[in-house]
Image (cartoon, rainbow, N blue to C red):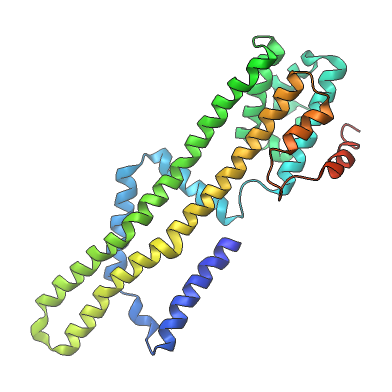
Length: 285
């Protein structure tokens, strides 16, 4: 929501200032300039990325428009889930988690925590961390290295949409100049039609430069910054899972292990230590 409000404020500043100067807002909407900017920008994305990359870009933009993919409820539920898993393993051994990990969709534990269970990236990451530990294929002190490989891979994948947005942001002012030059070329071809037509054509050409610069600094670059912020919160979420699992595997008590997890989260998402203790009292009941 804040991102949309920011977009509206940018547009309000643009149209408000232009109107105060006596400009007619309709003169800013020149179809040929928008077609040039839009066509070249889309072509730029197609050239610089794969179909999967463009899909990830759309997903990243949708996520930030919705307010981000990690919210306070996500943080609360993952801490509760970890605590319940760790308590189950402490009482009955790690083998007690095998059925939950092998088929998480049917797990009575996972099904309680929708923000994890209904996100296949999160549930896969958690189960992939638990599986080698349950099978005994890895030592507890080796688990962190294994899980951090996945965290780093996710960070690199999440960074691709940011790079694409930055490429577009860096290119838009230049694309705006191209659109303006095309407009000037057209102006030179109609110079014999009088000062009025020439002035109108030059004004239309200049909107290309305006929209290119505005698009870069008013929309694309700020959106790239928001996607980066969103990615950081997502990385913290996976780090929370990693540190909690590794702490428990190395012998920490369940409450202490999720305290380590809690400290990995942004302060806007994580409950306080007192809230955490109060929260886990109802877990498993």
